[in-house]
Image (cartoon, rainbow, N blue to C red; front, side):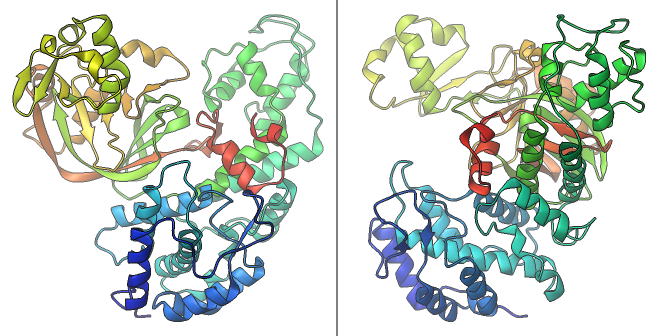
Length: 557
């Protein structure tokens, strides 16, 4: 199949110019709403408009029958928007397109140029401003067309595989039972492994089968200890039920039903703690009990949500790469398909979330300056300087106007509480530097990177949400040594000396390293162990509300 080099016909070019210049413009053919007085009603698209656009667009025309039938089967409802914004599925798909482009730069175009322009335009809209109907319907159609094109592209036009892809885009909200029934009926074993970009989908699907069977066959009443903790040697009437649950989860190999807390039970508890991100001491206390008592339906829903998310996760490359899983608070370093090592990380706190995306690490900065963002200057430094004029000097910072270093005493700080601060502030290299002694750069639009930190004690915390969005790593020296080990000019001694000498030094990597920043609260690890973590940013709850018929209580647990 040969595609034209450009899809921007003269008509579509004029449409985009008009859209960009007049974001509030009403569409020439308004969307059809089931009740226009309710902002949260389902959105519909004019069927005649779809057929006209598909016929005129050089890319969409290749998939015209599939696209028209797709919208016809969903009664011409929007596929990628809810009432106000892009769905989580849409964001995942767009991220997949960007990831594929980033990691396969030598390949053909996989993102429609029109879609890029419209998505960029959408990102400029203030959070509280309604999106124009024109933009939403055009982007919805382009996303659907790009979906068919991308699947066709990665499978080289294999139409037999194409028949099985519509499950990627939710048709409408359904019950979780219906979703599971559909998955288990239509995805036996590894039916979709040739369609999904990675194997996590199939691993989670197997876990879904297991947990759904547990839910159907077992009562799940809360376990009560009537004591503070249980450990080896304890006897308690709740121990048999604890053993049964750990046996069902696969952490315990036998289920003896005795009331004695045995050595084997301790080992099983440690495995359970590992898979739930808890302190691995083999003791059953309030945190372990809370996870054991989580309703099994909650876990089924959690797996379903992460199944949806995993559809568009990029496949692991057959080279050195790095994965950070935000809810796990962990970084994993791989050499090919083998996990080399892992360490703890600190991620963005509420309000400054770490974003999920993919990029390529290009260089390392030893003894870095920290160029402090204006948002932090505004929210933190100016208030501190008003209270304590020595704050800048105490934290080894300097104020700059171009190349000129300013005297903090010459600035009326209260003047800039509301207005923009006209200078830059940077923190000099050294022990007090917020970036520590090294940072690792993989260019991205979010200005997120990996870096050291002087606050080592925070890695002892279980819930490590303390940053402004960047990712602090527990073992920065080890990562620097790992990334430079192929370069014989960078010995371990030279790396240490450069890190701590107080002079900023940029080192370009000889080979770029893919970096995946993921958000998975349920996944299967290298030991074939199903892991769960808390939904720290509320992404699971939001996605579940978009996908499934359920109450607010179901999605807020």
